[in-house]
Structure formats: C-alpha cells, structure tokens
Amino acid sequence: MNLPSEESAVPRFHCEMKSEQKGARARAQDERPGTYVDGVRWRQSRARGRSGSTGGHSSARHGMQVAPAPEEALPSVTQEPAAAQATFGELVATSAAARASFERMACAAACNATVLLEGETGTGKSRAALAIHRAGARANAPFLVVDCGALPANLLESELFGHEKGAFTGAIQRRVGAFEEADGGTIFLDEIGELPAELQPKLLRVLENREIRRLGSNTYQAVNVRVIAATHRDLRAEVQEGRFRADLFFRLAVVGIPLPSLRERTEDIPLIVERILAGLGATPEQLAKLTTPDFLTRLQRAAWPGNVRELRNHLERCLVFQSALPPTATDAVNALAPAVPRRVDASLTYAESRRRALETFEHDYIEALLELHGGKVSQAAAAADMDRVYLYRLLRRHGLKS
Image (cartoon, rainbow, N blue to C red; front, side, top):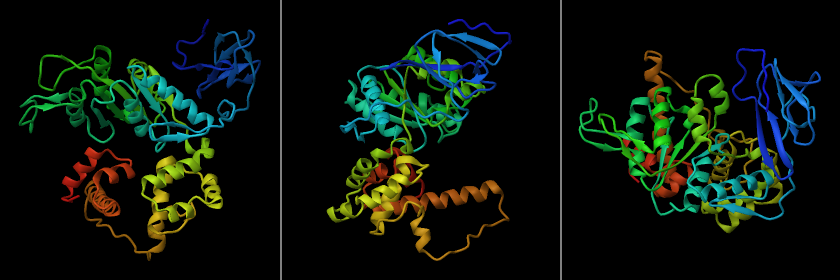
C-alpha cells in the first residue's frame, strides 16, 4: 500500500482491513478530515478491482472498488443468519454477530496469545474472558482478575507486580502480585483503558519479556502468564489522543475480539433471558411469566444502554416484585416507594460528602445483594457481575457478614 502525503503527520489509524468469508473489507476510522473518493466521503469497501482514495491530503491505493456511503455510521457487515444456537462458556446466542465473536474466542482459547476484548459496558467481557480461560490448556490453573480502574496508580502497581517489605510506607511485609499469583494461569486485566500512563511502560515490559519486578526489588523474575484484557473505550482513539501507548495497544491486541452490544443482537434476548432466569433460580411459574412472547417483544424493543448487565438487573427486579415489569421501569424500588427528598450536608467539602455517599451506597447495596441471595457470596458476586474477591473486600470494609 502506497501512502504518499503532503502533510507532516497523518492519523495513526486511518482504516482497518479485515478478512471475511466474502473477501477483504476495509473500513475508515472516524477521523477528520476523512477519506474521499471523487469528492464522496468513503466509509467502507470490499476488495474487487483497483481504485485510489485520498484521506485528507494523503492518498492510499489499495486495490479496491469503493462503494460510497453517507456520513452516518454504517451498520455492521451483514452475514447469513445463523439457524442454530451457539454457546461459549456461559454465553449463548443465535445472532451472526455474537456467533462470530464466539468463533474468535474459541480460536483464542486454543493458543496462548494475548487477547483484547472490546465492547460497551455490560456486554459480558468478564464472562468471555473466563470462558476463554476455561476452554484453554490453562483451565486448571489460576484465573485472576485485576480491575485497572478501581485502584489508584500506586496501589495498582503493587496489586499487579507485588512489593518487598519496606518498599513504601505501610509495606510491613512482602506481597506477591497478581502476575506472580497467576503464574501458569491467566490474568484478566479489566478496564485496561483506565491504566495510568506511568504504569503502561511497565506492563509493556511484562508483555514483551514475560518478567516482573516487585516494588522495592532490583531483580526481575520470569512469569508464565496468559494475558486477557478488556476495555469499553476505543483504544485506537486513545492512542490518537496520546492517552494510551501505541506499542502497548499493539501488544494487547494480538487477538482482538469485539463483543456486540445487546441492541445489535436483539434476536438473542429470549435465550439470554432464559439463561439469566435459570441462574437467578427462577421457579417454573416465574420462568413462564417472564418468557411470554409479549414480554420478550417488549424487552427486544428496549434500548438497554447497559446491555446484558442492565437486562440482568431488570429481570432480577421482576423476580423480586413477582411481575413482568416494563423495561422503562429502570428503578422499580424507587417507583413503588414514596418519594423522599435527599438531604446533603453542605457544610462538608465536596470530596468528603461524595465519599460518605459512596460508602452509604456500597453498604446498602452489598447488604441487599447478600439478603437477596441468602448470604451466598459466590452467587451474589455472579449476579452482580462482580469479582468474588472484590465482594469479600467490600464485606470486610463495611463490617458485613455473609
């Protein structure tokens, strides 16, 4: 591909090329000034003949016959509808988009390559990561989860790589980090897009050399770990803006797997509903009430910005109130309770007031969650789409018992 340019700089990611059953497909990135062919903005094309295109002041000759498209985003590539049901771990689907993701997951599970799961919040990235781990050769080895957005940089570094005694104030004993603890198994780096800039080169070294160094240590030690990362962010855009290292992105995206949103796979909702209700312990009567054609149609027409996680929460509310609540009732508890004005203490600083509000929410949510699931931590963590270790940590923080 020839890329002559009159500019000193062009976008790092200009277009994506993917191999599909019908041939190669190129798709433009949402960058400005954009790519134009004969004065028409180009968004995507399939490999057929030869053609030229220009992106801003640059030109790219890629041997494709261009099909112009309007300014708005194009829908995903159409595929033949899948007639059979497909499953991968706890995930289930009939839609072509989801089945394509399952196929990539199966391929990823058969090797030890680093995987990057990309998709909106609530699309099931954590369950996909666990399914890949369990389907691979490391299934009997540890599977550790680290939420890169839940800890500040100084604590996250210790969480990932560990520290020696006396490495910093409060380090009263040596601590093994997640990479060491997951040795021989898989480490799942959730929300990798939130990784602080100062930790990105350190993670890059781990991915390149498979070795870590604890805080306060002068020596490196080898680790045998399979890395799966996930993000709801567009890391390509983050690279363009300079917030994420390009070399780290390419190391993470050895096998990139996009997870479609729920609105892109509405035909899967009946299967997902049945799977969720079974996991929540619904009785046959409850299952019959919440899987009627009318109710499922209403669920399929809803927007679900929170995707499968939001759908799960809605079905859980339906079970609590023993009713097929309409999807628009996003907070059934508050809808049925009398309105009570919230009061805040304006004499406190904003940070302190916010901290107290978060603590109150965490305490009340965890307490209600455990009560709903009979004190069973594993079941409660799965229903909340939360790591079990993190749930135990919240229990200790708020003095709650399972």
